[in-house]
Length: 135
Image (cartoon, rainbow, N blue to C red; front, side, top):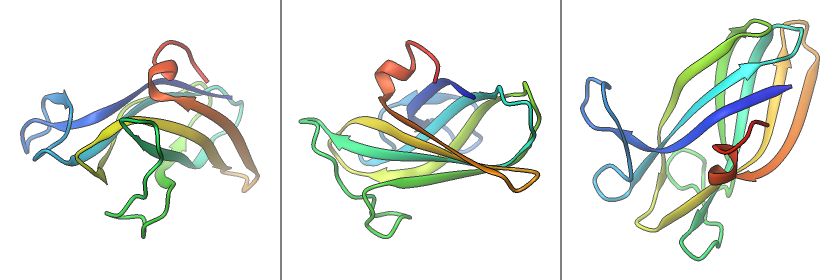
């Protein structure tokens, strides 16, 4: 199991990445920050967080910056991540460009282990709910 401890939308206030701020950078660029734990008994090679952005009236919109206009942003983190390891402050910069971001949905998590076995976890949970409990 993957425990998503915190999912945040915002940006770094300075180029030196000392202070995380909620809200957009330059009024429209949003980054994603994730803290998670590997509660599997195997080492993870790759983990991909599939995120869907929603506007203020909860309509999904397309990710135009790095994801070719797809509705799902696939944020890939490269391990290794050992069993029971906690990973904090993972930042994917400038994931969304919009002036009207309302919320983000963690659709699913794709995992490839060091033994090349795979696992998909369907989450379908909004950021506000994730920060109240773990996945």
